Amino acid sequence: MASYSERNDPRRGKKQRPPQRPHRRGETPSEDWIWGWHAVEAALANPARGQPNRLLATPDRARQVEQAFGRKVTVEVVDNGFIASSLPQGAVHQGIALKAPPLEPADLADFEARPGAVLLMLDQVTDPQNVGAILRSAAAFGAVGVIMQDRNAPRFTGALAKAAVGAIEKIPVARVVNLSRALEELAEAGWRAVGLSGAAERDLHEALDGSPTVLVLGSEGEGLRRLVAEHCDELAKIPMPGGFESLNVSTAAAVALYEASRPRQ
Image (cartoon, rainbow, N blue to C red; front, side, top):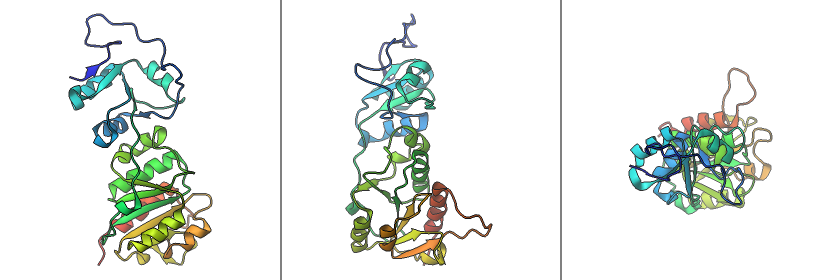
C-alpha cells in the first residue's frame, strides 16, 4: 500500500482533524503544482521526475495512488478544500495535486533527423491551454519533440499540465533562446522547416515530402514572426474549403500533425 502521512488517514480507526494550514511556512497558492488525475498519474509514473516533493490527495484519490504505485509514493491525505486552497483559484484539481522536480529540457541534438520524423516548433504561443492541447496532439500523432523559446512560453505545470493530460511526460521539449538560430542548427542536422501561414500559396500536403520536418506554428494573433518565417524552407497553409479564415492554434497543430504523420514515398 502507499505510504501515507498520518493526517486524516482513511485507514485509521479514528478520523483525525484535517490540517488547518494549507501551505508550508512561506508558501502561497501557485502554479508550481500539477493537478488533475491523469496529469499527476503520468508524472508519478515518469522516472525522469524523481521523487515527488509533495503529493496531496483526497481519500479516494489516495487509494487510487495506492493501487497504482504501492508504497513508492508518500501521500498527504486531505480534503478537497485543503487542495483547492493550495492552488490558483478555479483550478479543477479532481482531488489530487503534485509538486515534483521539473523535467530536464531536451537538446536539439537529441532529435534524430530520420525519414518521416516530425518536430513541432511554437513561435510565441503562450496560452497554457493551447500549449497543453498541442503537446497532447504531438504525443498522439508521434511527433519526436517540441521546440519553444525559453522566454515567452508558459511553465509546464498548472493548467498546461492539466490540458496536456500527461503528454508533458511523453514528449521531449527543447527550450531555446532564439528560434531562428535553432532552425539553422536543425537545417545543418538534416531537418526541413515548413512554416504554417494562411497567406501561403501551397497547401500543407503539397509541401510535405516525408523528409525530417519541423512544423513551425505562430501565435493566433500575429502568426509567424518575420525572421522565423524567413528561416523556414517553405510556407504552407491548411486548406479550408469552408471559407473560414483561421483555426485555433491548437486545432491547426492537430491538423498539421495528422497530415505530417501520413505515410509518404
